Length: 242
Length: 373
Image (cartoon, rainbow over all chains, first blue to last red; front, side, top):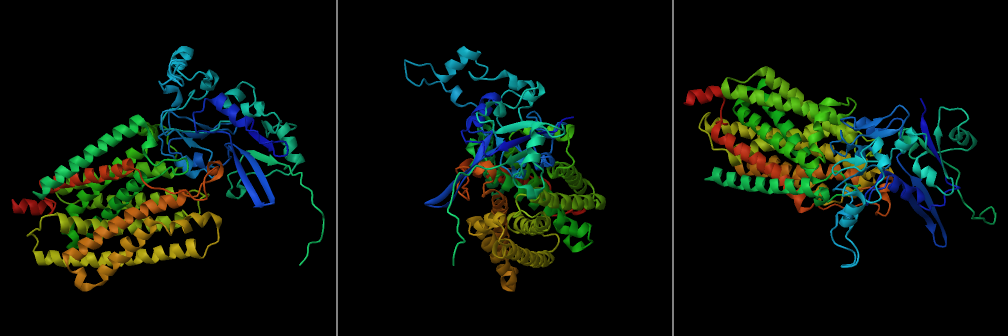
């Protein structure tokens, strides 16, 4: 059985956010919910400042605190290492969100796709209302850009009162395809593969470079690894002074 | 007259609660002060408050039966009934907290034994059944030692499992499970004593059986125990503040340091612990009815604020990608719907208790009721 992992090369990542947009399209995510996101930091004081960009997603931890805490096994591990969620079993207690040290689980506080339920046209007498567009495109069943492939392993779009998070695009992986964020990355900064398979790209990268994972000291054993870092800055070498 | 007024007020509270429930489950949780950082807010704090108070009442009701201190027997029936009503209030708040309460069936169909939440749900299920059986025995025959012991044991389980639940996350060191599994049962006991004093003295009809002098002695003794428990709680509370808030340099404890300046922390400390302790330390105040009632009321208000403080301490410092675009600490102020949830729970509890007071003769045991009729 494969054990999937992702390696993110921070030297290649340009911070364009294509992964986040691709993820939203592929997984029918509603407004305000990001399975693929980022952590940005600005360090130093002007003029000696630097901006750090770390792309983030569910870490699919081997010892996942969200899985340990879920009372109904709605949050569970698949044999291939993916941390999966079953919204049918979710009681909406948000204990997984409380337990997750990475802040990658979101809750549907209200019925999703509020915008597409709006019956007011953007320009009165000129454009149709979002609700009319939905009616015409999809017979009122889903948003116009709805991806039915997502529904093969998880509900196509999640309902009010349950949590949701990245699934490593398990529906695509099942078909032998890469997660869509990996596919969409224009810089090939994301590499996905099997940790158990000798000679896989992820095994090669983890051996070649010194990887790190987020909050490793917590012992959750994340399966998203980061390698390298981009820093073009140069400086005049001195010994400093007192 | 008092009973009718309370029934009227409780019905109004329940009506408000039902409207809030309809709005929350039809519109969504946007009616709460929700964010993906503050995932647990006042409805859950209210649940923790009521459920711990119920556990504390179980500790009080076990004094005459489990520990054999017979002079506490006159309190038994009222305390057991209070446990039930307070537990119901907790359940109401819990339902209003859950996003998909109908899916709780999966607690049975797909259990996760590693989850403290699963254990807590099971323990509360057992607690409710045992409590109902225990009250039924008191009402129809006599107190069952077996059932009372079971209630006591399950109450230890619920109050400590709640500490496990909130203290489990490794990423939130301010929520220390070892501390909470002691602090929660201790404060539960304090809340239980406060509820007994409040409902016996400010609410119930003064009873002529047993003699009022004996009853007064009993309440004075309860007030003494109450004072001791508040004192111990205050010591633990101060050490928590010193260890986690003053002497620690851990970044993750920054949230607790921040919360030490919050209204809920200060309310818990001054209103919930210091003020009632001072009242109970003064013998001239402690023997008065108003002194006991005021101290009880203050403690319960302070503890409610304390339950909110605990869960906010765990959440106000955003973590990981959820921290994007947010300040180092987020602030919380409850919405009117969240306040209505707490009122809903309180109203259910008051209505049930008022009806119990009216129909079950909570002043005495079955034998005393029989003798009186």
